[in-house]
Length: 422
Image 1: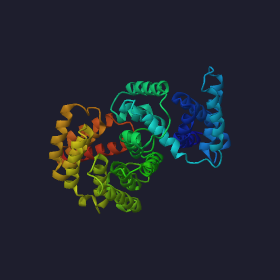
Image 2: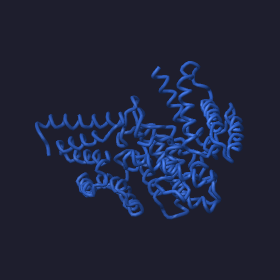
Image 3: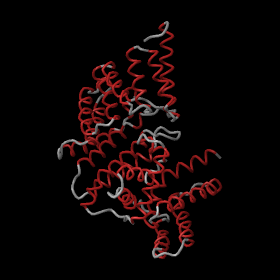
Image 4: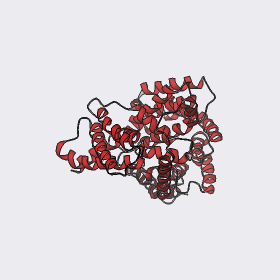
């Protein structure tokens, strides 16, 4: 029964963005749409273990959630919009049968609704991640390095503002589209990141999120009235990262770091597509943040082995990225590149400066990087301590397995050396 429930929940996570976007378009109320979709999930958990998962689960969920929405609207106090909403909900049945389309426009409308300039930027992105990406409040809070309760309050406020201000559910004209593009790109970037390195759940990679972010990025580049290099840069970045996905986990689903990956498993056709998109974008504009990150990923995919990687060039690219985005996470990535290009001691010096700022005090990758630098320097006792700090901040089971393995290796090396090593 647990296996069936896990399959149902996986299907739900894969399909909920499509269904929720269609519901929100009609009812124009985020909370109502989410409640009706939640009710549909509960009915699926009750019905599907007996009848089996339908061939078209999105159609089943849409129909069930739509019927629930009709009931809720009928019971609501009479208002001007009640009858038009009921008519549209009835018509929604036409798009929930066996020929149900992909509805890319609905999902793009949802993104652009959430990314309206009347809303606070962080709230724009967080709400889109919650509704379209299906990320939990805790996942979004971790992405922004804020407490879960704080993020929950922000989500409530922004949904209320969209409802009260009557923000339209439309893809804007070309001028307004450009105004919202930066936020839309950030949404797609974060959806892909959550898919590429999941913060919750059993699997390290949520392939459905990666695929959805890439699909929407493709559509976005197609609907823009003129080529937008940063949109193309983001698409290239996703493609180049996704090309390495088949080698990021082993047969047991455990994490395999970049340096240890079997590069024969990389998807070369996807990498070639990413390179082509990147080269086209670079011919049109000076590099922005997404183009720089895509260029970094391109250098990784071009290297025949970890030893052949052009780390000095990657280090310089991260310096350029940090000038455009002087965030602590970019600074951490720069420190890792410095450690690879100039040695772990140079990287450790930069990490110590970052730790002194205190902005990444609860950020697990900081301690994992510190542990790796210390291990490479032979400071095994200090490395073990850093691995323990990283483990304390880790919740994902796959990451826990990897870090415990590294800690065990360091402790074995300490015992083999005959005593503590500092």
